[in-house]
Image (cartoon, rainbow, N blue to C red):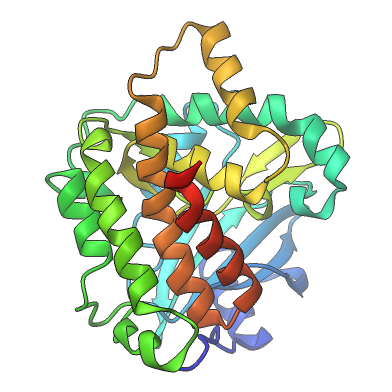
Length: 309
């Protein structure tokens, strides 16, 4: 299996899609860095900044409008989606641009200073009103989760048959990449053992909560970006943030904030381990597919050592 390559999108196509939603007059159309699965451009139209994203993955932005409205209406600094559609084999989405730089672009010390605010936002994000939506797992355009239980969700994530998705034929990675079958099976076994602690808990999960999806102006957090949104145990987001901000005592800072806010989290340690294994497995196969061997080795060693600590 070869490394995934984002689609090639030329500027005339970008201008055409923008004009369909906003009219002619887009200026300063500029390719943006980041976005593992999307080709992203920023632009201005009548003095307002926007972002347009393109993906060749089926249904890439299907739930974007729902999630954008859900979060932005409840005070989460998430970009409002103003346009969405399909052209040829590409899905696209247009969102209002939130000013700021990726938190990843700041120094480690500057990131540490933003951690208390980041944890406050994460806590609000994970406790938003779900407006009666049902189900677990990926959020569909209707606002409901795709699966009836958490177990159904995570088992589907790692099922061999992923036809038509980014993970189609992913078992080939065991033969064509650094992904080790015995390591994957060991961690999957641990996930199975711990997942029942996560099973009863159903909240909003961002699903990709790390520095590359967080914006700052240097003095505050200005926005939260791209989701792999789902319903389930909110400690998924803490596990992601902790692994991406290793060395910043993220878990302790999170627990301190929850205690101050009077939020009791039952079975915290067991649930956190379950989410480490759930997201860690996904990280392993993603890093293998992308050819990121250093990130693979780092995550592999962390996961294998987790139950020994």
